Amino acid sequence: MSITFLNHKRKKYLILLPIVILVLNAFYFQIATENIKETILQEKFIEVQNHVNMLASAVEANVTRKWIDHQANIVDSVEYLNRLPQTFAVTYKPENGKLKPISELKNEKEFDPLAYDMFNRAIGKESGEITLSFTPENGAARDMHVYFMHMPLYAPPNERYLVVAAVSKFSVVTSIPEWISSGQWLSMIVTFFINVWLIILIARLGTIKEQREKEQRESGK
Image (tube, rainbow, N blue to C red; front, side, top):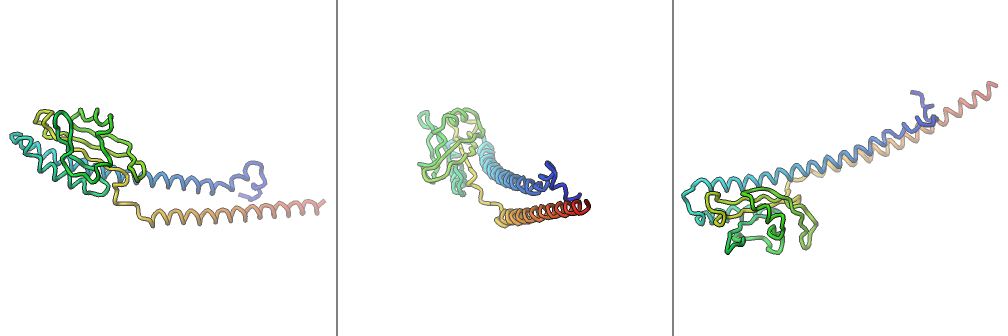
């Protein structure tokens, strides 16, 4: 293609196409990074769910055992979850018609799912998951992905423990390596400046060629 298209009223803007593609690539990379982080968070949430489900399976394995006899195992398992980085886990026990936490919490002034009406309505089911918005006293806002389950299910509703576990984006220990994102952004910046330099160079060549053609036409008269 001749570079004379640079003097065309509309076609001249095609020279900016590499810059446009570069900007779109930046948005794509940003969205892809967020999706990767979201996928890692979902894997973390599934891991917590599996832990609670495994605990429930162990509790349900012996239907002849009294519900109170499961307390030590349930509390120990939930406290293990609660000690994981940025992971919330608690065991509630019904007392006088109200749920009381019986497992150790990192900070009782922090996240409290019972403070949410949405959660209190949801736990009417045997198990489920729900997302609650939470802003700690000295931290950033976050979505808490909550999983809950009553156990043992063979016991009457007022004799079941409620196990609750929750994670947020801050619970993810595994992160995308810095060299991947740094390398991507560095290559995009370098490519951007190269494209700008090429655009300026092509534009100047187009102007020079147009000037020479003009001079040749004038000299031929």
